[in-house]
Image 1 (cartoon, rainbow, N blue to C red):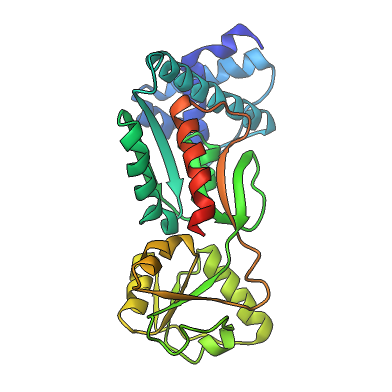
Image 2 (cartoon, helix red, strand yellow; image 1 turned 180 degrees about the vertical axis):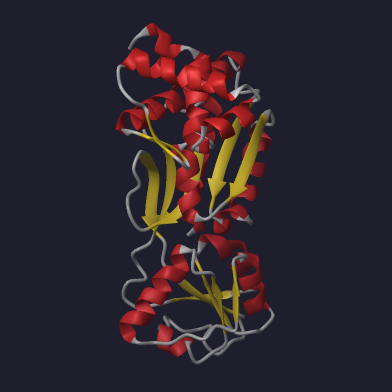
Amino acid sequence: MPKPLLQDTALRYFLEVVRSGSATVASERLHVAASAVSRQIAALERTLGTTLFERHPRGMVPTQAGEILAGYARRAGLEEERALEEIQALQGMRMGLVRIAASEAFANLFLPRLIVAFRQQHEGIAFELDAQPPAVVSAQVREGEVDIGLRFSQAPEADIEVQFSQPAPVLALMRPDHPLAGAAGIGLQAMSEHPLALPGPQTTLRQMIDAACARQQIRLRPALVSNNMSTLHSFAIEGGGLSVSSGVAVRQLRAEGRLAAVPVTDAGLDLRTLEVQTLAGRTLPRAVQAFLDHLKLQLPEAM
């Protein structure tokens, strides 16, 4: 690859235009003149002999060549971060940063407990944990904004390496003294006869439930809809009725005897998997790899 392409300034400016979709917005975020951003983009295009952006009245969209260069630039930046961390940690894993994006089901209880346990052995490692909808989790991994993504998935994602995967069955939640608490399984039709608290339509869990209801012509009328999993759990704990969840999200609440969980048996509700995601082709920093290994050991027990 031509040497001028590796100049840090040009790649930083280029990536910011990709992220923002505008040279003007990119210049504001970079605190430089818009003309400087435009010059760097033009220089890259001359060096490569190809157009990197489609220019539209409302913004700039990467061409196929631009997407390829963006992928390279992201990986180059992440490799630089990894090298610096490795140099700083030559005397042992005394420092480092692990950035995680996760669905709320993991971010509330499961990941904080794992982080605390990990830091008891590696107190110099710091963490950033961002709770996001599933699609945003994968996007942040793909963009290099986080090191590890933890989410529920129903289909493969481009440029994503799946480090760990296992089925994530849907559970119906209720108080331990609820009449259904001892059932071996329950269907959506039976659940519809009880007050329900359901997640919002942006979640994979709700989308699966809605699809299964549509196939069976079941109409659910939830008493509560919330994008906060703790709210849904509290609805069931307080005796409001039933809710739904994955096993990992309510592991501790079940262990404490505050919730009972029964598998939901309808066809199609077994298509979701729990995935641990990283950027394809990336070599992870030592601290990130160590926590990833720790996470993969704990997940089977959590389900």
